[in-house]
Amino acid sequence: MSAQSTMKERLRYAFDNSMAKGTPALIGWLSVVTVLFLAVAATFVWALGLGPAGDAGVDTPLDFIEAFWFGLMRTLDSGTMGGDEGSWGFKLSMLTVTLGGIFIVSTLIGVISSGVDAKVDELRKGRSKVIETGHTLILGWSPQVFTILTELVGANENQRRACVVILAEMDKVEMEDAIRERVPNLKSTVVVCRNGSPIDLADLAMVSVDTSKSIIVLSPEGEDPDASVIKSILAITNGPGRRKAPYHVVAVISDPANMEAARLVGRDEAEIVLAGDLISRITVQTCRQSGLSVVHTELLDFGGDEIYFKEEPALVGKTFGESLFAYEDSTIMGLRTADGKVLLNPPMDRKIGPGDKVIAVSEDDDTIKLSGITPKIDEGAIVEGAVAAPQPESTLILGWNWRASRIVNGLDAYVAPSSRITVVSELAEEETSLGEECGELRNQTLAYVRGDTASRKQLEALDPAAYDHIIVLCSDRIEAQRADSRVLVTLLHLRDMAEKADKDFSIVTEMLDSRNRELAEVTNADDFIVSEKLVSLLLTQISENKELAPLFEDLFDPDGSEIYVKPAGNYVKPGVEVDFYTVTEAARRRGEIALGYKIAAKARESAESYGVVVNPDKSSRLKFAADDRLIVVAES
Image 1 (spheres, rainbow, N blue to C red):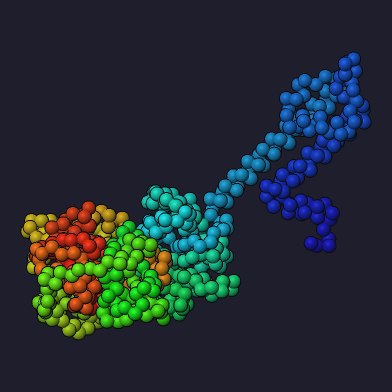
Image 2 (cartoon, one colour):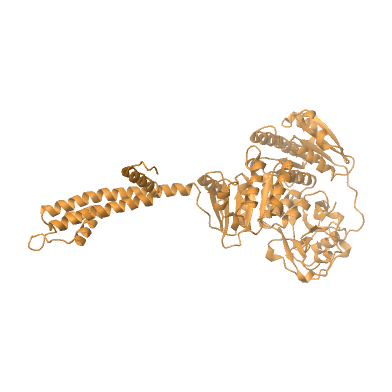
């Protein structure tokens, strides 16, 4: 403060600073004014010997304390003075106190009301600190939030209280309203929303990042979303006040070129999901195998059976093949070794060692229990010998985006030699990356047709019925809603053509907006919509169990073992009643794991999961028809 300032200026400056402290300071100053005012009034009454009229009609003088109390009561309740008796001097004194009290009380009410309004506004901004431990923290906001929340609610249903905290650069009330509309039943899960930046250290501290169980970093909408994701991971892992224990971060990256940078900043604390690559892999796998989409959804959501890890000392020393029969209502699909390595469908003669965990598909983690049953295998029902060689396949891709070349290359790793693939797009061939990124294909020939994929005339000229698989892709060169609209038109044409031809088309469709996916709801297991929902399901699973990351990486990779849907007649005789222990044995002899089955007669019944059953009770008996399929984990 300047030495040339006057005393008045200094006092005014101090007063202004105190008033700037908000409602508490205003109430404090009002209290001081009230006390001074009452003290002056009490002194006046006491000095003049005033007081209320006594029994003889003469004023009874009040001492200072009594006069102060009389004034305080009339300040708080202006009606009190209506019953005053005494000299006019006393009445006028009480009138003055009452008028002053009206001003003081009305001012106090205004200050309190303004303070409450200000506090409510502050709370609505979502800037108060979150005091939680063991919560799931979601950084960022996108349509994926609703799928993630729905799955977390299901995962936390057996907990008394679970908490999910969301930090995004969005109004807190808007987030809460959107969640209330899209996820109305949160059950035992509490959702806390806060407004802030996922790359700001102070905002991360506000949502208690150091006490979180897991952190999901979403890819924001707009240009260069990967940069924001990488900055968020960096702010978590390299913050100056970070915790000593490692974080469990799950993040989404869109561009493969940014994967290396994301892994560098995340190190061992972050599991990075490459969204586009994942969607491409799932598209490739699901388009070739009827019902596989339902199997993937079953394993990725929390609505039915999921994948768990469990150490089983009773199985130590036994072979992996023997462990397949150890559970009645759980299915073993691999091992996690004591040193952390995930083995999906390992050799059947591999011994289970101390510290190894079985990877089981089960309804819940507490349902993985040894049955103690010694199964009786129906040897006469098992089909032995080689199966028919894979036949060439034909695939039609309608539309083009940057994932198309990955899909073409991915299909080449699965299909038999002499297969063919046709790509139809409005772009000229030189505008696509066909020649640049697809390279030399080993098992299929590639043809390109320029045309309008939303045109009924063009689709009829292509004769979709002549193809084994159809993939409809969204363009990445136009606005997302417009791209989804074109895909929806194409899909409607294909469905109508399939109905008129009385033939089921195997269609995998890509949608960018999950709301449009709901408009194009599937009609059977061969009519599958690929969208960001699958990425959301994967993120949620990994956030709940970090050990699942390498398992899913292996499961969706063309190398090693994956899930296949194969003819049941390759394993057991059609029309012969068998239990699933016998089916498991038939698959084991081929080095495969029986995961479930698909009943062709129920392929259009959504209530029956389109005939797909994952992890059936092994004692259940059934007869397979000639066109039924078996769901197995196999290398090819």
